[in-house]
Image (cartoon, rainbow over all chains, first blue to last red; front, top):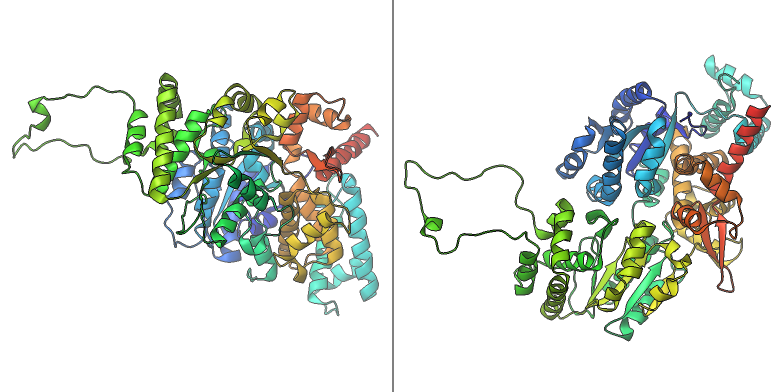
Amino acid sequence: MSLPSLRSGWLDELAYAAVVPGAPLIVSVCDDLSAIETAARWLTSAIPSLAGCRVIEVPAVELPMRIETEPEGAAPHAYLVTDAALGVEVDLRARWTAWDGLRDRFVAALRHGELRNHLVLFATAGRMAEIAEAAPHLLAVAQVITLSGEPIALGQEDADMVRVFRRVEAQLQAKYGMDTATLIGKVMQREPTNVLPADLARWEAVAQALREREGE
Amino acid sequence: MSLTTALTQFVSRCDPSAVAPPTAYVEFRRLASILTAQLDASPSSHVLLLGQIGVGKSTELHRLCDEHEGKGQVFADAVLRMAQNQSYGLVKPPLDTCLDLNRVGWHDLLAFSLLWTAEALNLRDLESVKRLEEALRPPREVLVGSPFTTLEIPAPFGRKVLVGGPPAPTTTQRFRNEQDAIRKLIETGRAQIWDLSCAVAHEVERRTSKPLVLLLDGLEKMPDAAARRLFVEEGLWIKQLPTRAVVTGPLSMSFAPDFEDVEALFVSVQRLRAVPVVPGQAGFRFFLDMAKSRGAESIISEELLGQAVEWGGGLPRQFLQILSGAAMQAIADGLPRIEEECLWRGRLRAMDRWQYQLGPADYQELEKSDQERDAQARARLLRLAALIEYEKPDGSLRLGVNPLVHELMQRRDREAQRVAT
């Protein structure tokens, strides 16, 4: 299978998804096994610093037992299953089909009342077609994040989004009377600006998405 | 960074894997009231509820339970609770997480549901429950009348007992552990298991003084072949269910030529379709209210909310997923509100799964008009919510491509053009 064309998040965004108490099931799709390793390492340091959650790596074979037996009242957890997409085809299908059926029990166990834990199932793009066939209902309620190795940069296939982001950029440039390059220069040089903090965060995010993508 | 902002609370209230709490519920179709009226009509009322995934069936069934609880009647949930002074005992057993829907039959469904009810109500001591549990145990040889069965080995030798390992399963746990074995047992005596299950239903009703209503939710996730076997080939058992019931089923079944035969087995068929989202009309306002009931007003403009409604395609879950993704993006970007670019990123996130679920053949089918599609392809696309079923104002049906999938199709075209040049 060719690499996915749509990438919906990068490491930081995956880390936020794994701590903000929204959908507790996350399927993170990486290019290959080494990208999974990188992402897991990143989450292991980012998640505790973002929200004080614990990160626990769980082997795929132990998953149902581990998350269902976690005592109530423990600190919030993010469970990482880095070997979720490993295995021969038959085993992989059987595993994800079983998880598809168990999704409501997973969610109930992860919730523990108001306290929200998260479960991050790592998959490789090459195995996602099989996984999608085996676990359609789990994917329908999970956050599926195809990971980018760097912050998302928009490309030619995102023409509509580029138009929106350019418009926002133009609004900010007009509001503060400077172009993006000047703003970024000032930020890099730690020079004071009159840009409001919320606008600054927005401008930086927009500029980041509009930067030239590697190889284009 | 503080994660206790209005944005994080909003994300939490938009969780697509959770049923809306009563405070966030917005009524649109009054389905719960319609179901109540139909259940009241007869002690053998069986209602079929059809609708694609994410359209709100489970939410409406929970609403049905809430309404009865609110009237001091009955309430049952994934964890069954029963109030006093009610008129029904609503039971919603966790079918899709405990049974293999590829092979399930009405006997398994009935026996499992009633045993689960008895366990949840702590009524396993009922004679009928014990008899059904015993009937679902594998036949085994036991030694009767032997003096050795009571032989005690005196100290200091003691006696060996097994320690460790999981506790002995309850019968409903055996449905989860060894459904094949239970199915085989049921096949050897279907009539006996049915009658024993009916006896459980009647005894539970007598003990609780509440007529039971089985809410058999989750059956819409059955594969087409399995649904056909259950509803068409084994359909005669539906009429014989011993209690009132609301049964969900796969939407694709309603396109089969013999669906009329299935319809005839139920008192009524209720269809939950995607809500048409025309600005200014009731469906559009329903989604705005749904977002506002979750606290959207303080974090997103009405204009952007309207954009999200259109992208939601009339499916409540999809709408909430887009908003939740947008709020998550705003949090990650360090913004206090959902801005336009966050909403677009939220939409991108919500589109992600279809790039793996749809293959080249699916895209070809999506390009066709519905008259050109074969039934199997249509069923698959509906199951994946790549196609959405809408109701026209005159009550007739319209199928449309999901707006997010439509965007994915356009992305594919743009990429193909780029590669070609």
